[in-house]
Length: 218
Image (cartoon, rainbow, N blue to C red; front, side):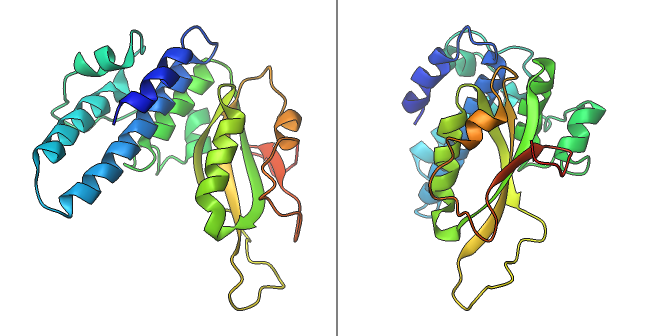
């Protein structure tokens, strides 16, 4: 389970956003573990389920780590499960991006932690809005993350506001998504826009990138 993440963790060493990238790796590893554990639980308790649960608890305890140094396996092994759920105290800027009521929510807390590291490293916050085929959402997300890495990372994705196309017909699977992400200031959002996956539609409107707290395209 952990091995596919080890090389990615090591490759983040020495980069300007090492901590941002490593908290992202922990978030993604947790999601993979949770998915695997859910599948196994449907089949009944097993030793693997208990092992994954222990691994999950150790990783969750790293949410409050000041720095993530050393190799991945050692970092996880040396962590100690917390008795109480962790709670973050982000800055007002991060709260505006994440949403004060969502910052410590179980499905947003790791993204909040990544955002806190991004602010510390002076990375920029953006959002990308664009139309895709909903059946390809997972692949679009993967492609976009691959384009961003290691100069950026997606915080979360959600439905964009006012997303219904005026020409929608029965069976129409078009969906307007909003990907909130952070980006190294040395990389312009325009560079990213030119590399977007071809799965993004140009109609009813072309994809656009905006500052996270602005409605104006960059």
